[in-house]
Image (cartoon, rainbow, N blue to C red; front, side, top):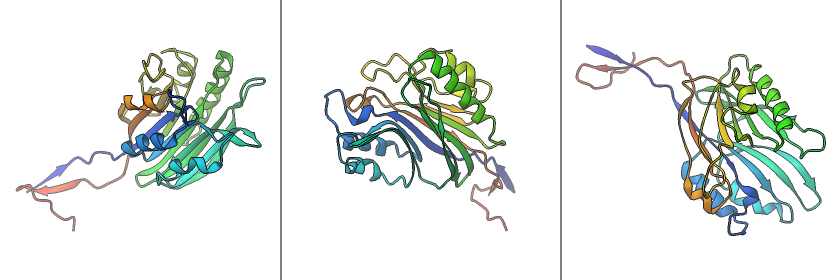
Length: 253
């Protein structure tokens, strides 16, 4: 006698972290310790904010490139003769149609969202990586633009993640994005030494997508933010596994 077993949706791991330019509380630039902590969690998708090469050779990014998360997109919000500053997205799987959306507000620091569709083994995932502004009025405009992006996914599961700089539990960002991406992490990440504010988040388009989320207090030695790590479920069309009555798996032929 065969018994059908439910097939649990597969999960992938995403991680977002504001790395403070690679400079820790000791004032030392060290991307090796940043990379070591990231490698410990083995993310499939990684968003990093405040990636900064200014005043250094571009070779300083080698520890991040050495993580082996092979597909890469970046948003250079500041570019000067001696380097650049911005945020970056790494994924294990190919991306399609990477688009950089200018979210800048006049007279404020430039802001850009990275939008793409990731071709995961479990199906497509719409993903947006962000680092929003510090002023209330600019975050309001940026959040409304992000909510509009989330509504244009054509039913593809959607995740947005990054540093939203919104320190209110029911602030402007949350209210603007609630209908499009109503489910999010609620971890305190800033300041890293004694986290009080939920600045760094992962937003999801469906309630069953967010399987788990956590942070890593060890990151306080490397940045002024803690990372957010989340396990995301994606729906997949698989035939249910079957077992014989003695518990041994039976082939489907």
